[in-house]
Length: 368
Image 1: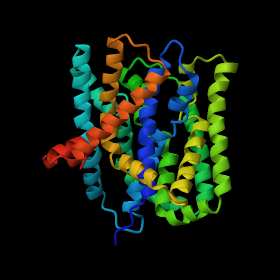
Image 2: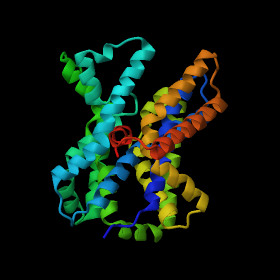
Image 3: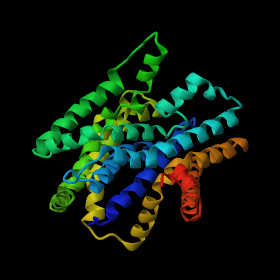
């Protein structure tokens, strides 16, 4: 028997996609000589849950469709997942490599070493490294399933311990770990560690898997602890903002350095991601959802993957036009660009979803 479609999870995909676009547009806002700190806080700080949340949602989808009690055939599973992720990854990476090379009038990306490095670490465009990490999670699926079985025996202890260990690892990787190697291969492996080392996101991934396996139990617990969930969200949100403004005020960080410091792998960033997942599950699974919210976020959730793949094109076109006309990008312009990029990306997703394209093209463009 097929399981019911969980709309709240699909809404979360849509919201996280909006957050990913916000982060990338925030990179435009923050390079202004006098950036709007409040707008940067929304785009670059409060949207930070979006990237790790997609690992939560990916794990949820994997384990909801193939729970632990069902037989697991690794080769069949991998074949499906590679079609969904690997083929679009290669297609879009090659496209962005050509796109960037044409714009820069420089085709050095296609030199053998640069070509392999770009594909291996997900460097074709700033957003596509996510698929590299996701592919590693898929390849290591035989590890995650037995691990989840063990953790499910004592979930409170297991996940508390994993969160603490993951937080220490991320802190060390983000703020302490340095390497200066004469070997270019080793130096690249270190410099791009965030693009492939799954340990940075192992807690949120396993939490997504656990949520899929025990969805009804978790949502029942959430519905009975609404006050705690909302307070947790308020505290972590305040913590993110306090950390962002605090290091600028007390440590004299500039906004760019503050954003690079208060990210999703920071201790408060990890807590903020967990609280946001619980908060959204409460409001979108345990409470009635207005019809317009359902229509909007269900549509965005359905189109989230094509939107994710294509949105850098529209963002680069908008910023390119602004540069061509010597437009100083104030806060209102950034907000308008955000709207344009989102609408055009959603329009593209709707178009390829409805177009009668050959099957191999749809697999290349959106994995199915």
